[in-house]
Amino acid sequence: MSAYVTTNPTTGRTEHEYPGLRDDQIDDIAERSANGYETWRYASVAERAEALAATADLYEKRSTELAQAITTEMGKPTKQAAGEVQLAADIYRWYAEHGPELLVTETLDPQGAAESLVQTLPIGPLVGVMPWNYPYYQVARFVAPNLLVGNTIILKHASICAASSALMADALHDASVPEDVYINAYASAGQVAELLRHPAVRGVSLTGSEAAGAAVAEEAAKNLKKSVLELGGSDPFVLLDTDDMARTARIAARARISNAGQACNSPKRFIVVDDLFDDFVEGLVGEFDRAVVGDPTDPDTDVGPLSSVSARDTVVEQVATAVNQGATLHTGGAPVDGDGAFMRPAVLTGITPDMDAYAEEIFGPVAMVYRVQSADDAVALANDVAFGLSGSVWSTDIARAAEVADRLDVGMAYINEHGTTLPGLPFGGVKRSGYGRELGRWGMGEFVNTKLRRTATR
Image (cartoon, rainbow, N blue to C red; front, side):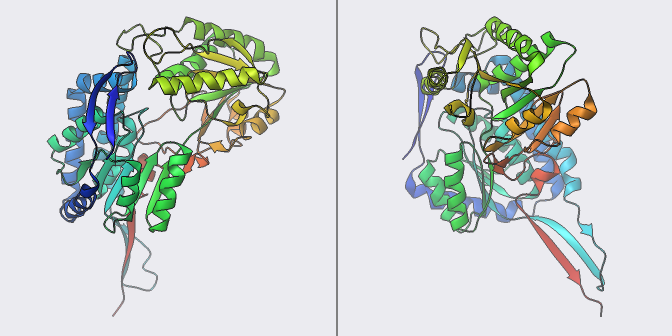
């Protein structure tokens, strides 16, 4: 049996422990979800949309409580936590308002029949395996489209997110989503595998590490279940030119240190043409040095703790290894004395392909800055990693930036912005960043039966 534990990363103190799911409950949960599906799939689309709209309203009404929970669990600064709650609400509302039109039956060219049409139908119970870094947003982008289409959900959240996952379940149930349609399960990795072996379960979506994704995908494949994976990233931020270096450095710094750098699509590699390199590094270091590291409940805090002391220590060790291998550390990189999982945001340069940091994801407030001679060199460097989640290109010449962005081997390419996520935009990557898409109409299309119904002429 697993144990879900809330250890406040601001204080280092364990505040609550939750009993994990018992092994003898696995079959019951799968069967409950299957029973819920037999009812939910036949509810009208309008009824399901109404439940999502009510969920959005409840998220907004309970925003303070929801935000406080993740500030306690994983250290997200209060303002950022409130922003995440609102983004989750926006996702539920977007699917409530726009999702029904994506489920309208499509009439095809009859092609010799009296009628040929395609229906978009649910497939059954799904398992969601969610991470701790965006506890509400990650769940919403999986749950909202799948509840609307008529699937049911068994949600296994990260082990540090017990309180917030319970609050999410409460909101959905209070919004009239039946308890067997959305089940919050404090499950272990082994129990997830057992759920995927159950014949009632039809698919799984995971956001997390490469190792977790590979394990879940293998189990799903062995049992002929559909999987969607959103894994790590080492996103490039390509700077070709700028007419305001101070502003560019400020935007870059904010993008990197938001959520203490714990975002898959955070810009982690800053690739800068030679004549701008020194000024950019100077500006970035200045912004990092000015960032306030501290209590996430303080409105003046820019960077809260990492999710745990062990996570902080991993990032600190990655920085130290890079320096030992020859990289230059311009600022930060050390843990902050005292309780909690705090560290000083770090800027590294001089990273070469033989160093560990060149190929790995650093999941914390660390910026790696590279010098290149040309746009071609920037593209080559940007694509020279195993990840392919997102990337951005920055230039006053939009046509030139678009040409470079089109050459990035990523699932999401941005020009003069980075990592924008909105309910109607597709989210997902290529290469070792995973496969499948969430959000927008693309998220609606992953776990569905695209069913042909054809009527012959008599």
